[in-house]
Image (tube, rainbow, N blue to C red; front, side, top):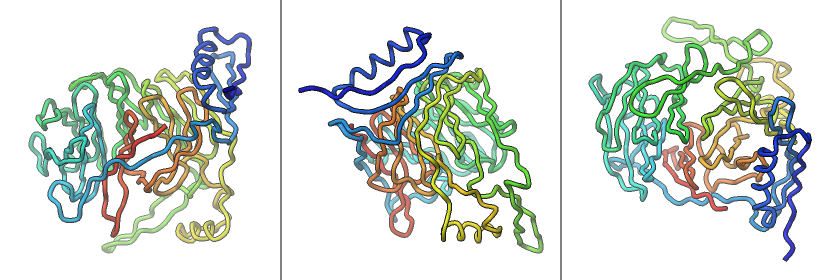
Length: 392
């Protein structure tokens, strides 16, 4: 049977043979099974630019599916009755760690969803939390936790034993849940609020810094902010907020330890190294949706500003996620996510992948080897941890 040929155009004859060969070899493997169209350019700087039309793949494999494989949670249980889930981690054996900010403890579940143990409790001693703000599993065998009021990292093993405690530069409630990432080399990446950047630490229970990356930021000014008065207990506070849908930057760390950055108003993501070099740009030929009608009126009313101050369009990109295979999952919905726009490891657009249940943006969903673990809300907004299987 004659297969479908992938329409990938490689421009710039000066493109390194190794890069061109790798791209063509990887795409050729799937050429018989998929039909997609993308244009790949290489700039003089060596940056690869992948331009995708806004059309999903049409080959016989189709777009990947998400199927619910596991659900954890209850209303009146002991280990699985969650209060305020603010962070999730998954280790190499499939154990799921659920950080509950309200209970100040971490519930540990087997890969089958059975409650194994709890880690931590409220307090100031070793292994205790003042305000549990985030967790992440490090492939070296360590569960890193961050305490937003005690200003410290505590490092556990899978059994809940404390391996190390380190002071951290956090600011009380500066970011909840706290942005933490791990890469395939076992490095820990930590959002540092004092200079609005990311710091990379070496694998292991120590805290050895390997580098830092200053994140881009749109300056706040009178054109993109508004002021609201917040009243309470004989006090009035002027709160300055950003006007909804004014451009912002989003970012994440990918499995290679590089950083994806995007301007929310344009459907383009850029892969940068810690040194600031741009390796790759991936684009989708799609405009941001217009902000109009009753939705525009409602947002302006809630902010207490004239609707003319709102931008003409909403965000093209809300959040960026990555999975261990190098695929990039883009969220475009303002609230809970019902579908992701997905790009493969080459930056080629795979299509829009729907979820069987809405997945909350916070806590951050965790992408594993063929799985997605996140939180969905049931009746009465009861939180459940669900694991979705990625079927290709």
